[in-house]
Image 1 (cartoon, each protein chain N blue to C red):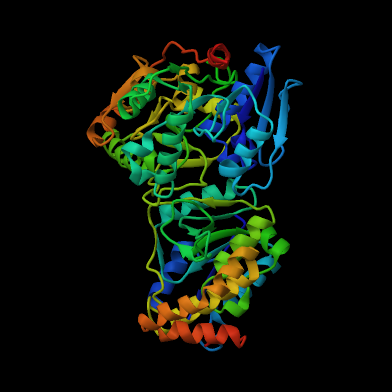
Image 2 (cartoon, rainbow over the protein chains, first blue to last red; image 1 turned 60 degrees about the vertical axis):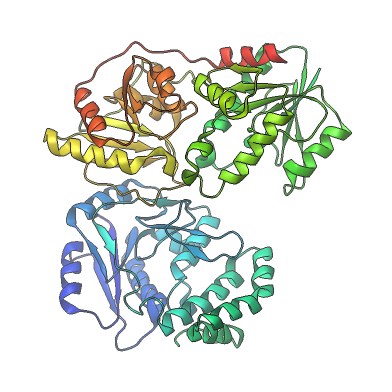
Length: 236
Length: 334
């Protein structure tokens, strides 16, 4: 099988990581440890992707280190990947709000595939480039999906029993840094890829957005918006 | 006579979005162009229509696309009036011509939760259609009854949609390692797929032999409650030729939808001589008749039992659904 797995970790739980690598089958697994030199999820993912591309792998499966999966579910998933034309394939899909381009999960319509566990064909990276590293974390997967779709590659949703992602354990939902990256990157994402009417709407709406964060006491989000405007990206 | 047609549904270019209404549009126009040698048709759309339906069918592209239905189309109809207007997308704009409205489904009234973003719009659109139309075409008896009880409307004709000629009982059968059941349709909420998957898992546990459940269809819409267990295969979108072979090779076609105004895939399966396991709601009873088994779409036991019944292939007499009959019925109303 010509499939590589890229696992990006940051201060990993060694035991859990070991068992994940075991399940994935060891030999085609590229582990990128971000602990010493923190380049962010997107940056770390790119290191792994480059390595996989150099080694000539046809498919690259991005796996978050907090994903749990059964061997059976994995083989079922890889079976689909092996038979597929170049695409982005994953078990969790999300939507983009038409007005604001915020992300919606769970979705009843597919606009993007969640990056926590997703197979991406090498051709896609060769055509549209790698993950956008300045995001650091969050939105890099959605950004890649939108660019792939525009380049004509299909997204495929393949929900499956036995692949689970705890979600945002790294930063914790609602934590200061989670808010920071989510707010900043959302604006960056709109700037990079949204249609003009969404850009105008989001900029005009800014006072309301700021007000919403203030009454919810989301200081991280406010700092994120501030850093967006002074063009500070990457790590907080 | 000049006949205006809302061909907005034909402006779709994404294959995954070509669902029931799209195929009704295409086939009706194809057949009408064969039958009708006197009238001229104007097909209104927001981008040029790819398919050419012959010299009597002229495509009029109306721009801009925003406000198309509420402003642009009424403007066109008042500047260039037609004698008859066909509302093929379950909607009729403001105009002075004789209107024939098409109603495919009132499912949004019964299960609004399955249409989280469109129920209100569909409701308004259908109410306007009822008010503005001089005659209505429904695609099944159950939809007709529904329209009568909900809106008290008369002047309704029932015309069953047809099935493409590709779907016949003779031809290649799909090769699958294990015997399989087949579902075809969008993975939308109203299709009740989580229920189907749970019942199938139960069946597998009981029978202790390998059977597969193959799902075919668009993944543009999705039901976040879906999660595939063992022996479930999702093929995505496939060509008609392969789809026909899938129908022929299947033990039975299964659809436990909460509500369907017609269900084209069930008709396709029946045309291929394959039995249908479906829910006893909506149009299934009249489409399936004695060529399958009807179950309660909330009772897993009943569906599991039906899987056991069809664990060995039971061939049925193929049924016929013809687009030509559909088009003739519509043509008589012009």
